[in-house]
Length: 431
RNA sequence: GUGGAUGUAGCUCAACUGGCAGAGCGCUUGAUUGUGGUUCAAGUGGUUGGGGGUUCAAGUCCCCUCAUCCACCCCA
Image (cartoon, rainbow, N blue to C red):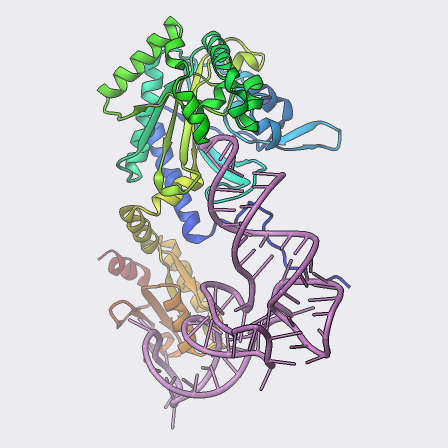
């Protein structure tokens, strides 16, 4: 005999229920609205990709590839991975579908679930959701500016006002290489003061030491050479234009010398938006330029820039904005169904018909079919569904060819002709 | 991967130095015929996350395990 077992979601993965799902849909609609204003088209790539795509794209040295991927072999022994991020798949789609032969630059956005095997905590889940956008094919700084302006427009429409925008440039491959060497030489004498992680990064990826939170390491870095001083001419000019023009287009930002990102493909402009209202996982979005990614994946040398928004975190924040929550509730309220209650078992079919007529008129409607329960109990159900309007129909109404329409909010009720009652209900709802 | 906190009814939580597992909310029904929200009454609710141990006796003490949350880490 099978033991009684209670199934539940696997670690780090959660049901998205009711209000939360509505809030998710709300930010998704806003994203579609705003991004399409800037000429972006929606795409959806598969949840599963070849493992190699992320190893080459995101980078072997990154934490994501190193230890956070859901990787498995399929039945033919191919190594597949649940996507841990969105940019590499889009770059793959760019190459596979030969977007280079279409209008340039390519501008796409996307949304969906992503997976990373990490220890769950507030704002960090094993299945999480991102809304992202990519602009591929234009190397110039105005693309960076426009992308950020669009992003802030989106966040503004959601009701955010004062957000911290951090900006930096990690330079081109050559300047980063050079700087990494300087940093390594600078830190080498203090090797023993570094934590185990940073010591390891000294070899693999010295740049990542810059965003350490360890107080001792931060202290050390005070005197370190600055990445920004080592930028080559083109990268420096690019960054200068981005900064100047962002100011001109009304984007408040702060240059953050320690802002480097965890994905290896970033070049030049990188940015991050954080919120103090989120606990330890305070980054709600991050992004940057990736001028070498497409080439790394075996394609031509095509530049790109993009961002990814942590949708779960974003929604948590949106729900903390009083105005947004009110709007969401009002919207949900507007779609509350009319409740049809047939009185007596032989009137269930009539109930179904009445509900169908309401729906045909575009009015959400539910029908309480369980006529064995007392009318009282069924009215109570209608109230619990937060219905404002209840339609009653039974023997009396059939005789007089009328329906009873009750307004729960007012506590009033009236009798209206059966024929064309849906239009009458519609009129009262919109009144 | 490391550390800390917490698991008792559908939900929020009680239960002393081990001594009969409880309350509120919810849910169901009723307070005479076909009228919700308030009130009153009755009813429904549990292998105390799971397993083992100590004890006359374990929700309580010990061990193991699982899960959740928080932080480190990582990043969205």
